[in-house]
Image 1: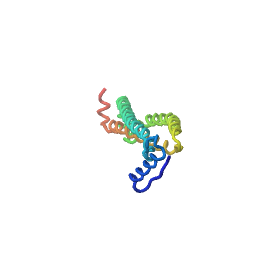
Image 2: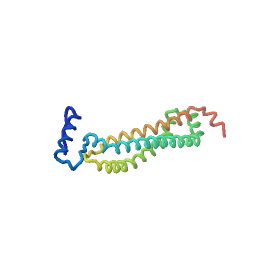
Image 3: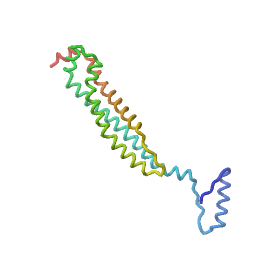
Image 4: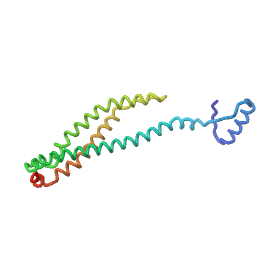
Length: 174
């Protein structure tokens, strides 16, 4: 039974309990507030969202560290090449574009693989709700742009550091 209560809630509950005991004395008087019931329905979703947010943050951090390590390894391997390019007149933006091009391609390919999988998983998750919404395309576009920007920043830190060093020092050591 649903009852809309406005005003003095304790008095209304006392009146409802009295009426209930007169009409159905063999059953206990139990009540729930509808807003609390709806809140309980979404508690699990809120906990899941918190867990996913924590693990997504950890995954992004680990991916950035891995990309940073891979970039550092590539810079060590290409130190002499970068030194020769600087001696021949390459600027830091040219070297940055040369280095980041390969890594940005890999991030873009990973994004293209992950997008359909993410779309499928999100739609399966949203099917569990009574009121359906669809995921808009711009959500994936924003995620792709954000991942490319994060990757470019991660790559740029190491590439600028390597490109800023003295090319004579790098070419002299063998």
